[in-house]
Structure formats: C-alpha cells, structure tokens
Image (cartoon, rainbow, N blue to C red):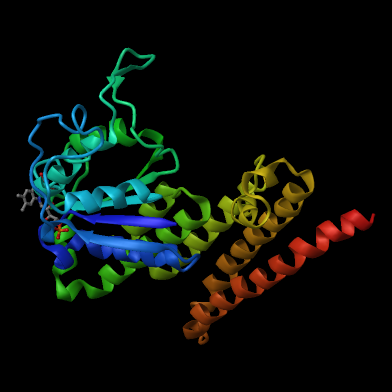
Length: 329
Ligand SMILES: Cc1cc2nc3c(=O)[nH]c(=O)nc-3n(C[C@H](O)[C@H](O)[C@H](O)COP(=O)(O)O)c2cc1C
C-alpha cells in the first residue's frame, strides 16, 4: 500500500503528533510491507492558492504556481492511504497544511453535484475511490469536546465514511522526559491501533482509545494488557458469526481478492480460523492474568508472541488442508 503521511506540525520531526503517527505506522508495518512517504510540510515550498481557478479553466488539473506542490499533488493522487498528522491550532489545522489542502483544488472538477440532502460538492477529477484517510492529531487542552468540533466536521465533509480519527488531548505531555513510561504505554496502544488497522482496514477505535485512556489514568498494567487480549479475542469471536469473518479479509489477497468472498468453502475455512484466533486470544488473556502475577511474569511477552506465531503456522497449514479435505469428500 502507498501511504502518504502529511506531517503538518511546524515543529517537523520534533512534533508530538508525529510520535503517535510513527507508532501507528510501525504497527501497520508489523503486519505487511508498505511504501511509506513522510512529508514534513513545514520544510516544503508550498505557496498559498491564488484563487485564480486556472486549474479549472485554462489548464485543467494543473496549477499555475511552480513550487513543490506539483510533485506533492502527484504523490497525493497516487496514495492509497493519506495520514493527516498535525496539531490542533485554533480549533483547526496549522496554516501551512491548510495551504497544502487548498492547493489540492486541481484534483476536483469545477462542476457542482447536488446530494440527496440538498448539499452540494465538486466531483473528483481522478478516481480516488481506493483512498482512505486517517486524521492523527494532538492538542493542548485536556478535552476533545468543543475543541475539535470544527475540524471533525470539515474532515467528515471531505472524507465521509473513509475517515478514521486518532486524537490525543494534552499532547504536550509527550515532550516531558519524566513521563517516558506513560508515553511508551500510550505509544504501545497507538502501535496496536496500526496493527488492527492493517488487519481490519478499520480501527475498533473505542477499544484502542479506551485502553490508552486507562493507561494514562495509571490503571494496573496487568488489567489493561489482559483486557486488551480479551477484547481482541472477543472481536474475533464475534466476527466469526458475520457474513465475512475477519481472517477472510486478509487471506482474500491470496485467493483472487474480493471474488473469494463468494466462495462458500473459503468463507467456511475462514470462519473456523477466525474462531480459532478468537479463542486463542481469550486463552492468552486468561493465562496472562495469572502469569503476570507469578515468578514467570517476565516471560509473558515472549510466550504471548509465541502463541500467535504458532497459530500463524497452523493457519497456513489449515487453509490448504481443510479445503483439500472437503474437496476429497
Ligand atoms: C498557534 C497555536 C494554536 C493552538 N490552538 C490550540 C487549540 O485550539 N486547542 C488546543 O487544545 N490546543 C491548541 N494548541 C496546542 C497544540 O495543539 C499542542 O501543543 C500540540 O500537542 C502540538 O503538537 P505538535 O508537537 O505535533 O506540533 C495550539 C498551539 C499553537 C502553537
């Protein structure tokens, strides 16, 4: 997947927000290889849109301004996932990334569409239906309420259902060295969110953000870690009752993509596998609870890494063996 990360913090690499973004990307890459391009918007020559509409009239799709935006807009069009990573400035986005956004005007057509609810918009010039968007943002205040209302509305209008949000209030705490322990716990959950996003295409945001808040509130680590395994297991188990169980989404890549969802044997195989993964995480949650309170506590991470690896090997074997067995009769 081509991932374009737009780091809109004027602090560039020192951005608090970018720390969460990097952890999230690490999580995504632990599941699959991705082509990631991180652009520090503050270092780029991006002039302001002049509002001349030449990109809609005389030179359709091309801006008259000759700066680095020409190259960036190509990367924007070719990305499968666009990560908007920036701090909240006055209830909106920092000015340079707003300049970037305004300069994406050539990607829209000049015509106006009328939606069912009477609202209107401009259709895209390019087929961007494959694109998804993530907004990762930190802010100074302790609350999202009233703070992010305008920005959320703007992003929802622009990207609708294809938008996922990760918001972290009190972002300045990321720069406090004494909080290193708390910060790495928070980043652990940001990484987990990335892993889940890569697996499920969507974050079960309530779960991840709920657990991260618990981490920040100093709730017992054993409880948080065990609940995260428990909820993860539950999510897999529940999904085994859905029309398309979770494991089918990523094994479909090896079986003609979406066409595989029409194959009852493929779905049945994955229903069994999804149940097995769900049960495995529930078992991990249970033994981790006791292990973490025993003398073997330091081996919990190792054992918990081993279990999914073995289950991965079982998945590889079972997804070949079971369909062959059914075919043989
Ligand atoms: C000009 C300016 C405006 C800001 N406006 C807000 C705001 O409206 N709400 C808020 O909660 N924090 C606000 N902040 C705080 C930043 O969002 C916060 O410091 C953030 O964590 C910085 O992230 P970064 O390190 O990724 O740049 C503002 C900061 C600056 C410098």
